[in-house]
Image (tube, rainbow, N blue to C red):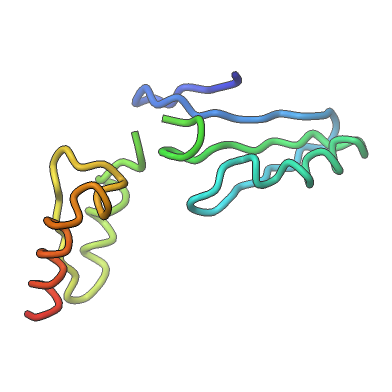
Amino acid sequence: MSTITTTDGTPIYYKDWGTGQPVVFSHGWPLTSDAWDSQMEFFASRGFRCIAHDRRGHGRSGQTVPIGPSALISSTLVKGATLKVYPGFDHGMCTTHKDVVNADLLAFFQA
């Protein structure tokens, strides 16, 4: 499996197919690099170097998007935003901890 490791130790999976002019395919949430297989096969067979990666927390890449450059910043940009951090909860928290999340959302909606 092809990976690079970021400065914070997170492994990021990538595909690198073909040779020639590089083309980078970047998927949106919640997909993986596999979403581009048909395009990568097509262009790699036509002389392009095709590169795609699995974003942090998706597919074969590692921890998730760090809270510092994501939620902590975005919560200051949105007027009236409330940032609620759940230590130890994972990305599936809306299912695995639905009672806690639903109660907090209800309190926010009714405020």
